[in-house]
Length: 100
Image (tube, rainbow, N blue to C red):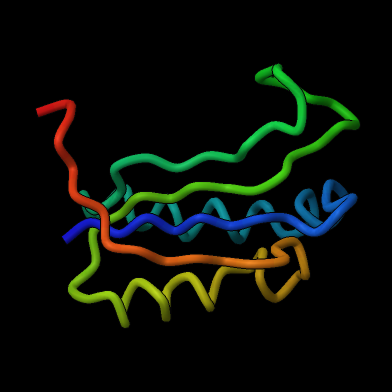
């Protein structure tokens, strides 16, 4: 089943994000190589693909896991969590409808 991992950043998270980004992306690339990643990306703080110094307000990952517990464990181990980027992370089941 798919699970949505929705994270909200702490204020002024940009420097922390930059430091932890390589390890964060490596985990996402592993999910992608396993065919389990539906989508992933950050939420820009402003209406721009490149928000510059405005940074980001959070992230969304939708990926396939064997259970809610497995998805939560994966989210808890994110380098952004240990680096203090995320203020709050929610993990919920996600039912893919579109695209079919």
